[in-house]
Image (cartoon, rainbow, N blue to C red; front, top):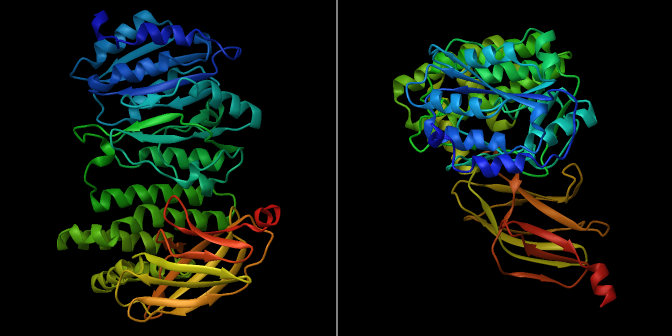
Length: 470
């Protein structure tokens, strides 16, 4: 049996003995639903054993949901070796909701943390999340999540630590890997849906966000790694069924309407939900891959969703291209959707600066656009770190894919300026995005110096003080 334990368990156990913080009682219950994850289960459990939170301050409740591989045996071996591990075996329920609910009913921690059996926790994760929650009196903590095994996991939500975010901001992450106050869950009788439905974790988490007294993001290091399995068997990678998936989105919208304390918050959250979970289906490359039958099924399901949850006037608050596409979906006008997608494919092509020179507070700029059909480009200069502070802007015509012009108004007082571009075709503006730059062709003779950032974008830095000192 001992061979089933991960090779690093003894070493990790010694790491866990390095107690950093003493907390009275069980601070956190780690809840792990398990089904046929023998390949990844040992490393995941080892990462829990390695936590630098004292053993008596956390418990692990793993629910084996009728595994047919050796997952159940692996769990039993860990439970035999570690007193804070508890294992429940049950018949297969077909989804993660019931195992999580069973574990919730047994949990004793002040907080619960929902982990998956194929992921990894960093050694400091539980301790730091609990400390962060206690320090800022938070009901929900969103730890920085990264992807492993080829899984992409990027979000502006994890750009920096923030001890006070809104439910609208938290909506960017609907996965369950969060620290949640157990009192919040129990006092509001919250449980996961147990039937096999997509986004059951999102339905649960949105309720937590809207009921929480405080939500925070801790992002000064990596805390949790989400894995993409080599065989692609993650539930989240299964094909979407239009009416079923849209029904799940509708359930989240129902929760938002019922629990949001302000109407504007509810409307903003439903619009954000639609952009993330609805409009993603209509991204130009993706929608084109569906058969005509499936395209029609999406249009039917989404048209019904829009009629119930998003009036036309709310759609008008979105970007021009999202508004146009949403209204085409509402009408189930596939031709209009495809035409809008063709425009979007053009408008999302990059614009690139080929030369830039600064003189007397004026930026002389020239560049090119990658796609045909662009007729104008709107450029803006924003203070770094303050997207609300637009310092200069100009609209330039595009001819034969080229643009050239002068942007005046660059003034001192800012360390650096970042540049953004928004192309238009036939009067329809595209998204406002960072302006790309080639790696040469920059000049200056004043306070500002244009340069290409490490990510390939155009910025201008203030060199006035350096020039004065030299």
